[in-house]
Image (cartoon, rainbow, N blue to C red; front, side, top):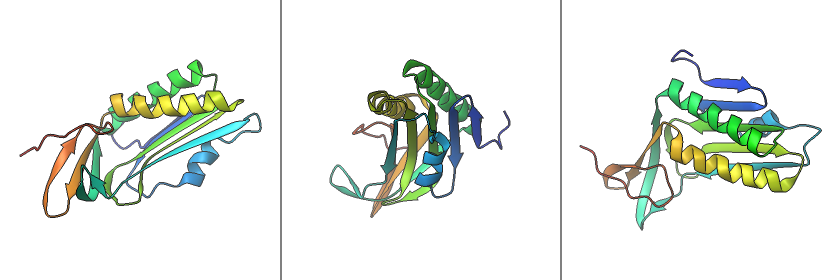
Length: 158
């Protein structure tokens, strides 16, 4: 895979990285199937505060070839574990303003329980393993690099 690759489709799995606005409908279309009894969609958005401080925006960066390989590995594992029809995971890079999506995960399965569980696992595995880094920019002060996990404190760099 070369450094310019931004998406991969493989055996019921779709992963992508983009600097563009994320499109919920196009990600759902990646997993839509007449065999699906359920489609679950998760959209992670930039909120306006963290720990009581006003957030201006988030900035994401990644080593794309490695991040895409890790995303695909996660999707393949979850696809097999939960007997899914399809799974899609797309992460936005660059600046993500307040209220806009930074990640979309869509899952289709014959039954809703498998889709719910797979969607949650996909998000948690992505946050734990994918080589995407987040910088939170605050109003009136320097930004902070954060672990890509809920509530995890960041460390000021430089």
